Image (cartoon, rainbow, N blue to C red; front, side, top):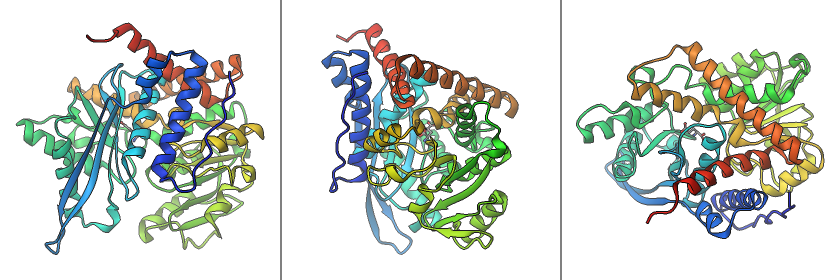
Length: 426
Ligand code: GLU
């Protein structure tokens, strides 16, 4: 593979701009490897549709605020657009575009018939009451209504959104349609047509990816640090502990905690739900966020936001295996440093694909008005994850690529091939 030098992260760019630069660099590398022509590269680098909306929200005290919302459909060559909706104060159009692009490659990589999309609202859900949150959600959905639909574009949870958000989205869409449309969103409560196993699916996928990467190594000797203790991080810690690994450190916005003998993950989760964070958990030592990333562990799972592993801290990372529960946690410059020091990185579009895989299974169940057992969902999830892991591993091995380069080469080539077969209209 042609070795390309990653862009130097600008100190003044927004996190979203950095994420998009990373995504474009990864695409460039894959396009170079695949020998794609300039026209195709340009098409794949550009989102198919981007919508920016202003969302007026009535606060409890009667004041009106306006927040920005986005929905980006990056590519629909392989099927309807698919991807989560993020509620986060730093979300911008750049970030949503990067995340939509990663969804395109992710769906292609794991072989599910979707293109990639993402949505975002620049709001901090922690500062809103439940009623304000519901109003923001419904108004945002109303603004993006022309884009979404079970055959067009199917949202799902992401950072800052959950089952309740999806229930409001399903309701808003259905009220406008005049009948119930469960297949318009995935990650819904099961009573509204959500799939068994969806809630923990991303984490389950991270566990499967971690175990695949560890091969026949005895999990009992494996130490793990998890950065982020939200929907993905907390469940990943639990599933890895269940698999026999020793989870020695976890962190969230409130702080980082560690115990060399292994944390009692269930007790940490209880403390987290009672106090709102991992900080203050009494049976562990306190660490800084940076110390957690640089801990002497076997496996590091970044499971929060983009851009946490940088050119600055990558040389100090001691984990030998990084499994990306989050989207885009490793900057391209950090990737080069980690590869140079022999660290294996299981990339986001592979490691965290369990979420969208079970979203797909949910959508299939919705479109057939049928439901599978938790066991059936689990088997299908495992099959698709292991199949993708095998393909990525084999390509990386045969071509001397990193797992990220191989995963992108597979994802991008499938989208390029779909585009080639469909041809250009008119
Ligand atoms: N937000 C998740 C992701 O980044 C899930 C998307 C989905 O299920 O559509 O993969």
